[in-house]
Amino acid sequence: MEAAIARGEFLEYAHVHANIYGTSIAAVEAVATAGKTCLLDIDVSRCHARPRRKPVSYTHLTLPTTPY
Image (cartoon, rainbow, N blue to C red; front, side, top):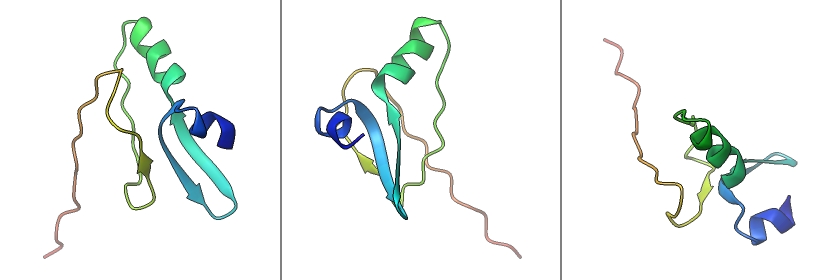
């Protein structure tokens, strides 16, 4: 996976404990090719995002509400 990250094949990736998790560009493009929308739930505190490129992406940050 390190080699694929170096080649820029991931939209984002994160090192979590001894593992690496990420979202490949190919997986997102496969969803788009099927005419569907790909929705990602990413932990931004650990995420290493690649510069924006294809496919087009939009970011929506949802913060938890304050309990009262």
